[in-house]
Image: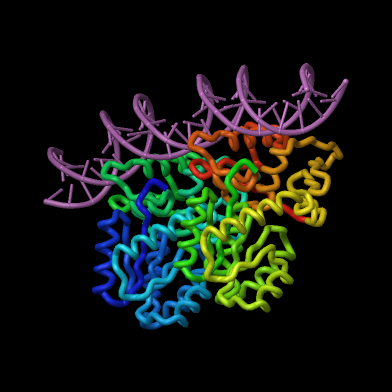
Length: 240
Length: 240
DNA sequence: GGCGCCCGACAAACTTTGTCACAAAAAACC
DNA sequence: GGTTTTTTGTGACAAAGTTTGTCGGGCGCC
């Protein structure tokens, strides 16, 4: 990936979030933050995260159980952070599926080195790590999107070929129906990169998708434009 | 083997992983690391490993039971590492099927010597190591791939001859259906070597495979291209 | 109703992939 | 042991896919 990886920091201490966030930003990463599990889930559904820094001690649901939940549904690499440096936590963290473990206090140099190491490792298996696994199908309007076969089927049986870019964008939309998604978000979700000022690539891709799946591309019913906001995927989607 | 062997280090101590990793890389090996059994299995499914360095003491599933499991399903050579230098472990390790045994602390010179010895030994009996896989068949689309006979059979009874390279690539794909595999991964899985910058050999081989097993090689349904990502084997595969 | 900004469309520039021809390497054959 | 045949890798070029630039029209705001 030639674009900056997107790191999510989950920690209830604002000072830590700010400190780490600044260090990572300076290093060129894109950074999001969350103070607890609920906020974490929100960020995960709004953007594509390449790695999570997860504090062990959190209010409400603690880091370990979050880690286990995350592992159950995705392969996003996790680095555990913890104040206690004892062996027990370390072992538990790795058992829960963390990819690495870093005891506080840590220096930013070390943190960055660890992050890069974990990212490098997880990139050896690039797309395998991305979408939640089991073969699925989505149904909406008169369409069926087969995730295993990367195919778009119309109710009358016709198979519409989708390019990789169209497919990735459609998945991002279909998995977040009835929500306004900004171009930035879509670019992040579908391509894993940030937008630069005059970025029209999402517009172009939406236009191509509409041409393929709208009955009247001039009056779109499925992917609607939200003026000044982005796009919204309006049909109800059923997962199978 | 004219290409660098790929060694997997399984140890929960980061410092050991890093140290050994550095020593082996300097020696010209390709290296992957894993902190526990889960990570180990992930690496094994994503790449072709020529030898495993397995720590006896691991969080969760311990080294001995991992060793036994590994032996049950593959013949990858294993060198056991252990902190306790007593005789008992050594005997147990070898009984579990390890190919060699190395007590910590060990020097990198000694480690490398043992690795080379084990690799040499396992290459002396290359086919013995391979054919112990019980004869299998894979079915997909209208094809049947007979692993024992290295034959590709179409439902109408026609046998399609496959070259060694085509066969190896097809096996790599068939064993990882519905997953995007990068060219690097495929090269590693099918040829056991790393890619150099302008490597088009996988493209060519995929093209040749498509010509043989797709109905319309111009619009492939079985091996799909993921633009910027690699290839994906889309049919559901059943093992017999 | 006019103004400025956002969006859609199209084309140009660029990147990635497919395939061909041929050379190199490996295997088979005599 | 040398020659023929088959298979595999490589570079070139065409085709497909994606991003960027530009322009005109439409939308909201005043």
